Each structure stands twice: as structure tokens, then as C-alpha cells.
Length: 569
Image (cartoon, rainbow, N blue to C red; front, top):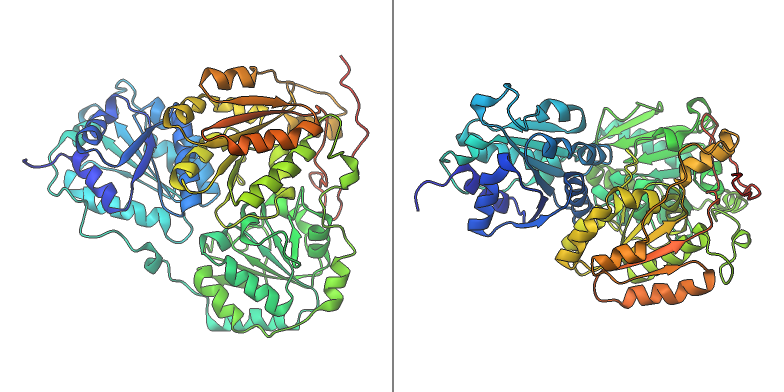
């Protein structure tokens, strides 16, 4: 058979790393690799309709499966279209490897057709980037790329391969002797004295709170967190990205903290005497006005990244290490305790995001809150994966979702990327075919990547898609209503008839506009074998509460919905 080319060896190397599925879009500079995919027949390739969506699909696959997601693009615009997806993965600690074609080495830097310095462009939004100029380096580059992507704080890695290198002979076809055991390479644990100090603070605390982020999910420590919380009566608030790390139905669950957090979560933080932060960034949406965050609390921050610890809040104890090892070591030092007085105090503040009597759940026009309450119940009861887009529906669903196992709530938290939900759900559904998968998106975000309906239809991916359609860029409109005297600038958005559009792709679809239709339509959608779409036509001017205005402390919440008014023409 002769010496394999780099393109052929790359297929073998990916399979050696456990890659069975990748998402991409071909083009001139990556054609040798696509030819190798055709001739070898592995890994399986899913043709996405836009490269940004390929990155989001790899992201959703990685979040749902816990494996490294892989996406592929050609040079120039194909590669630059990946940037938003790479930045999304970087912000949310998602392990991905992106492979891009590049113009031949002799033409590099000569403004060849479809040339772009993708390594330089993506440097700020990737953990690392490789340019493969020497065929002999392929095995080590692939191994190192997957190791970097998955170890410590996960993130995306780019491999850029010139076209002439892809065609060159490769010294070995299997990509190296073994796949990387990244778990073993990530074993880090804080010093004993720091663990002892943290445990002493927690054991003496009268009003402790755990703040759990995505690190709990990435480390596989959701069960350990629950065990610790129950043993020592430690109430838990979960960030948007840590939502599926602790069941919202648990008696110790406080709900989301921060800008759209529950009153109970935010007030608990502001009255706590000790806060244990596990695998979170303490980002601005959680902290609010920095000088007023947790004024009574001594903060313990546990995270794998020393760059993150101390960046936005100043902890008294820094636990730098992998939660896989940090949390059990800390738990062994925590004495069993009952904190009845503190738990009684917490119950004085409401856990529900918004009074249920505000929105009817049985009749009348459909509202976004009611739609997301019903969706959350269905999703939780079926154990489904849900990918949400960015905006009001994202917050409503996060507030209402009660049952979510680790890896089942997918959303763009750090970058806030509209257009994320549909391709991310596509990747998740292909990675976890035994789980039902839902898309919940607003009409604005859905239109940003709705071309992926073609991918869904072609691959017959059984997605259940719900578009919360209010004819506005809802969250931007809410801000303009509350803080810009209702000057609605560029937020009214039209769109296609989603039912007609879905049917054009051969996807069954129905529209829902009243509460009394909702249950039947959700039941219908759950029983359709293939992909299905619901156009949930909700009232236009509805706001997400609670809400912490920009620049306010997190206990300075707006909790009462404002009177609804019509837009003045």
C-alpha cells in the first residue's frame, strides 16, 4: 500500500485518540484530508452548513459526552468562521480540537487565495495552536493537541496543516504509540495546610454557602458535592454553567446566583459568613458590584486554574488543584453538622424565580415564562439533554429547570453566543443517541444558524426544537425598556414562518400561541420519531425577573414585573 500521506495518517491518529465523529465543511486547502476520509471511511464526518456551527456542534458533542469534540474547516474564510465557536469553547472550558487546512508552504505569507493567519487570529481564543510543517511531527502534534485540550482547565486547540504537507508522505500512519491518558496528567491538589485552613473555616461557619460552577461537572464531582452538602448542611447555589451539577429539587439547593438569580441565592451570598467557591470564575454576572459582593463572608476559592483564582474576588484561601482530588480531600476534613437556624433563615427568602400567579399556566395567551416552565418539566422528566441559546428564554429555562444530570444543560455562558443552541444540540444528539435532545432558542438566536435545519434533516437527527418567538431581541428589548426609557432601537425582528420553513426541510412543525394548547403540542413533539419543531408564539413584552441592574449589588434586585405596555408606533 506504500507510505501513507499525512492526510491518511491524520485519520488514523484521530481514531487512535478515540475520535469517531467530526463536524466540518470542505474546501480547497483541506481537500487531501477529505479525500483520505472518503478512501479510509473513518472517522465519520457530518457535513455542517456553516463552519461556526461546526465548532458549536463539536462543543455540544464535547459537553454532552465528556470527550474531545473535533471540527474541520478549510483555510481563509472557512477557518475564520470557526473563531466564534472557539471563543465560546474557551470561555466555557470545553475540550475541542479544530483542524484547518492552509495554503501550501511556498505560498504562505504571499496573500494566496483563501489565505489567513488563523494561528495568529485564534491565539487569544485557544489554549494552544500548532502549525504542522513537518510530516514527522504529526503523531506528537496530535497527541499533544488532545492532551492540552482535555487536561487541567479544558479548552480548544487549533491544528493548521498546509495543503502540501497533507499530501506529503508520513513516517507513521497510526499517530503514535498510544492515546493520551489526560486524567493522569491532570492530578493536582492544593497543599495540606490550605486544605486544613479551608476546612477549619467551614467547620466553624454558622452561615456557609457553596457556590458551584462548571468545574464540578468537568471533574465528575457532582455526587461528591451532594454528599458533602448533605453531611454538613451546606446550602448550594449553582452558576449557569454549573446548573446541572446539583439538582434544583434538592432541599439544600438555592438556585442561580447573580443577575437573574433567585432571591434566596443572592441573599444567602450577601449574608453568608463563609463561601466555598468550587470550579467557577466569580464572573461579573454572578458578582454584581464587586465592592459589595458577599460583604460578611470569608471566601475560599477552589479551581484548577491559578489565573482564575483571585482575578475578580480576593479569597482568603486559594485551593489550586483539580476538584477530582481537591473536593474529596476537603470533604474528609469537614465535620458533620446541622445548621437548622441558617436553613430556616434561608427559607424566608423565595426560591421561585417569579411568583407563579403572575403568569397563567392554563389559559390565555402563551407567555415565555409559561412556555419555559412547561418545557423544563418535560425535559427534566425525560432526562433529556437541552441546549439553550442566549437571551430571555435562556434565563427562564435555567430558572425553571429542576432535574438536570451532569452534562445535560448546554448553553453559552461566558461568551453569550447567539446561534449556539441548534448546532450544539445537533452535536450532543449525535454523541448521545440514547438520550432525547431538545433545542430551546429565541427567534433571534435561532435565525443565526437556522441553516443547520438542513443538517438535521439530512442526518435525520431526532431533535425536538422549541423556538420562543416574541418578535423581539427580547433581552436587549428588556434592557431598553428598563434602562433606556423604552427607546426600542433595532430590536424588533421579523422572520420566516417557522412552520413553513421546517416543512420545507421535511421536518414536522406546529405553532402554539395559547396556554391551553401547550401541553398537547409538547406531547405531540415528544412522540414524533424524527426531528420536530414547535413555534411558541409568546407575548411580546415580557421581562425576566429577578434582575440585578448593571452596577448594583446582587441583593439590589428588581423582583416585581413592571406593568406591560404596548409599543407606541
